[in-house]
Amino acid sequence: MEHSTPPSSELLEIAIGVARDAAGTAYRMRAEGVSVAATKSTITDVVTAADRAVERQITAALRQLRPADAVLGEEYGTAERGNQPPARVRWIVDPIDGTVNYLYGLPHCAVSIAAEVDGQVVAGVVRNIHTGEEWTATVGGGAWRAGQRLRCSTETDLAQALVVTGFGYDPRRRAHQARVVAELIAHVRDIRRLGAAAVDLCLVAEGRADAYYEKGLAAWDQAAGALVAAEAGLRIGGLKGLAPGPDMVVAAPPALFDALHDHLARLDASGGP
Ligand code: LIP
Image (cartoon, rainbow, N blue to C red; front, side):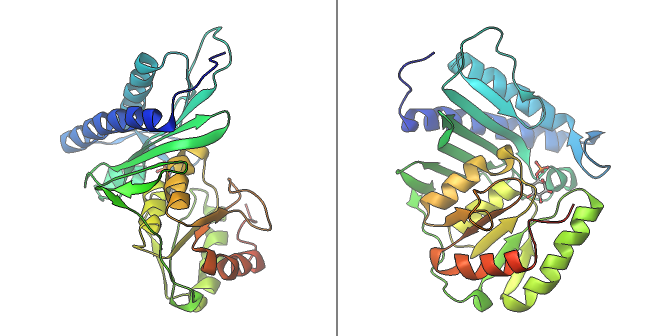
């Protein structure tokens, strides 16, 4: 096993370089025209040829740069490592987060790459494929975009909070999530459904919305974005003291977290199908 691991700043530099190339490929493939290559959990859970090509490109680049590391990607899962000893560094990759937006040409989708050391995410980059906006963070090193250190919203009143959320691909789960939104919407400024968790978390990190929550996220949807959000001052958690995860990810300024949490718990937002 690798004894010393590189500083998170070095892992971030690797992630940024790989993400920029990958976003370029995704952008070019979109311009050439994309279509649904296959569906996954439901008929609306689509994958395009670009999702697969971009993930293969990212995995190959990371393999080249850091052969001993593990890679977990949305489309191919954990990349094969032969009989190598366990890796201390694992890369968590969403080649195109917001695939439905990507398919429809909506400019809210991104390459998301996070570096995890001994189980803790220490560096992450989220790069919007269309706009080129790039959010980065390292643990203790802050969150950044375009050379600016990011700070989350200072809103303290939930009734004036702009809240971002999302819906899964399973119609029964969507119905449950819609019931939660139907109740919550009377207690907040407004709701936004933008369609890419990684970018959603980064927008909240820089105060372009006040808070975010979603049920059903996989590690690759949120690993990098959640680090950017936490380093910008947001509190990240699940419900009822649980860690953020597939059941629920809530990201809110400390002053708003409990109020939002309590509504979501009351509405059983982490429950349902
Ligand atoms: C998407 C998430 C989004 C969620 C969608 C989907 P994908 O990830 O980023 O927040 O609402 O249902 O899970 O499938 O585009 O990688």
